Image (cartoon, rainbow, N blue to C red):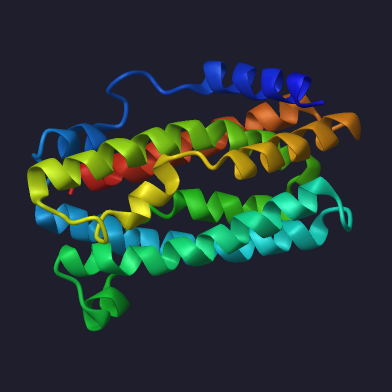
Length: 218
């Protein structure tokens, strides 16, 4: 069952994989050259993104066929965003934020393009074609998080709790992977368009890089 789904995910990942060095902020963090102010902006931007994406996933679940692997996939992603939001607070505090500064932070348009597009997909995309696009994009996101977590410990002295947000996404959960492949396979079996999935993935990858590079330019 998972074989053709995995082949589809791998094909989209290969096609859309960002070039080495395309993500300039992760490169700066990896070298310990990003400022604490930039790390604080990263925390504050993610606070907006995670909250928005959680609602988008719940809406995609509601638009998906009831009791399908696709609906279950989006429901699981929404639960993951809830956990990620809790893990984000220690990182924000380590960067110097408190509740007041997080509430008053004004997000950058270039950073919020990703959740804005996710919200667009929640309203307009074919839900059965979205799991492939998201699963393909998760590989790049997970790699970025692994690099950031390691660098936060090495260069910035952040403890395990402050790095928890990035560790949460850095290590793939086998159960989550299996559910994502099941959702992709179900979509393919129901006639989901590979070309449409690739298009969604291309946009997500572009907005992902825009997020990081907007912060790199601060």
